[in-house]
Structures are given as C-alpha cells and as structure tokens.
Length: 251
Ligand SMILES: [Zn+2]
Image (cartoon, rainbow, N blue to C red):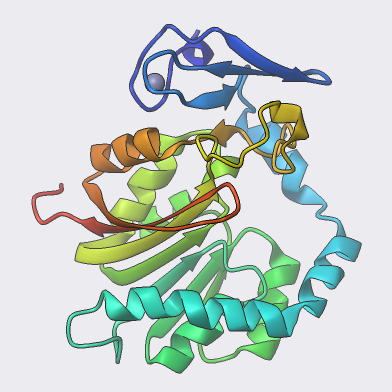
C-alpha cells in the first residue's frame, strides 16, 4: 500500500498517470510528484545497475573534454557559495561517475570526494583524476558511516533514479555541514518545454527513472530534510538545477 502514497507530501490521492510497457506511474494530486508504482525494490534496483552498458560508458568517457568544461562551470556555483572561498573546503560528488566533477572541484581548491556504485566508473576516476578520495557504493551506506560535514555537495541526475527519495535526501543532508551548499539537478516535469505526452520525453525511460519532480515538490522534499533552495538556475532543457543550503536549525 506504501506505493500508493506520495513520498513528498504523504498524500494518498495518487491516481494512475502514465504507462509504458509493463511500467506504470502515479501522480500525486496534492504536490504533483510522478512516481513509478509499484516502486522497484532494492533487489530490482541492484539488478538494474549490476551490468551497466560498458559500450555506453566508453562513449560517455569519450566526451571527456566537454564534460570537464561543464563540470568547471558548475563547480563555480558551489565555489561562490563558500564563505571565504573554496580553498580547503570539503566537496562530495554523489554519483561521481568518471571523476570529472571531482577533478573540477580539486582545480577550484576543494578537497574532493566522489562516490558511485559503478566500480568501472570509479576505476576510471581513480586512474585519470587522482588526488580525490573515491568510494564504490551507495550514498545511504556511505553517509551512515561518515562523519557529517561536507561543505559542498554535488548531485546531478541521480535523484530520479532512487526508490526512496526521503532516505536519499536525508543521507545527503546528513553528510552536509550546517550552512553547507548543495547543487542538485534532476529532470523537471513542470518545465514549459517538457513534451506534453510523457512518453515523448527523452528522460521518460522506465524503470530507470522512478521519480519525476517539479520545482514545487522538490522544494518541499528538500525542506523536509532541512535544505532550503535559495537559487534556481535557468534551464532551456526541461531540467531543475538548484542550489540549496543546510539550515542551521536542521537536525
Ligand atoms: Zn504529494
């Protein structure tokens, strides 16, 4: 029955919204969250990502130069959020893949850590971008075993893949220092350029994307975990790019 309830607002008026193949999504009538239902369990999620398409991964790494350029642009937003600048401040990339963002963060002066469940990607990061700490695994385990205190956290296009948004954002908040900054991106189902028919949207790829947010319910989700969005970056593509801070009164 859990699947019928909205993870963000707890609303239970979540009628069926979209279907593709064997996959169905519901939409919360209160906050607009669109979610896979039934949701994938941990075993299904693990199986889904156990054998990443290595051909795709190689193609991904070939775009290295442009990925590094983009990473340097994005890290500037987190560097600007640091009082006194990024030098020596700690930086965590959740879903670090091949290490482009940890490299950009080190160049900016951060002490960088990257975490990703994809062992091949982390091996690439360790080889090509040494100097950062890398961990293979999931964020929830990592956060449970690490001392709270990252000054800056980057998490791009990961949130839509998780089954339990509260556990995931809770782990991010736990890993952050009070006053720390988060740069988070995820597809924007409320964007003016999102195709009307969900199945026409290039990121509507069941079951990989389990959760689809709009600015309103993303703000609501982060607020539940003491994270306050203070800036939204304009995006031409239907995506949310937000900066949030961990409030001082957060648990
Ligand atoms: Zn809701």
